[in-house]
Length: 155
Image (cartoon, rainbow, N blue to C red; front, side):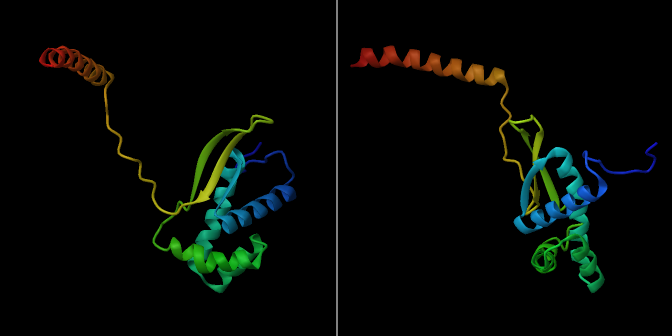
C-alpha cells in the first residue's frame, strides 16, 4: 500500500526522478519558463516554489539548502538576488501552468510552466446574447433596404 506516499513516480527510479526534477527546476529558474508534460509540470511546481520560498528567507542556511537542489551557482545567485525579491510580498503561487495541447509524436499532454510576472487580467469581454446580435443584424439590413430606395428617388 502507498499510504502517505506523495508525488508521481513518472515511470522512473527515484534517483533518475530526483535528478530530472533538479535539472528542470534549474532550467525553470534560469529561463523563466519551460515546456514539459502536465504531470512533470505539476511535480516541478512543488520543488520550484520551495526554492523561491528559500530565496525569500535569504539567509545562509537557505542558500545552502537551495544549492543542494540547484546545481548551478549562477542560478542560485539569480534566485537570491533577482527572483526572490520580486515575490517578497507574495504569499505563494509563484508559478503558473498553462495547458498547451498534445504532443504530436505520442499524444502526451503538454504544458508551459512559467514564473508569474504579474497578475493575469482577462480582457473585458462584452456579454452579447445571440438574440441581440440577430436583432442588430436584422435592423441594419432593414435600415439599408429602406435607405436605398429613398436615395434613388431623390436623385
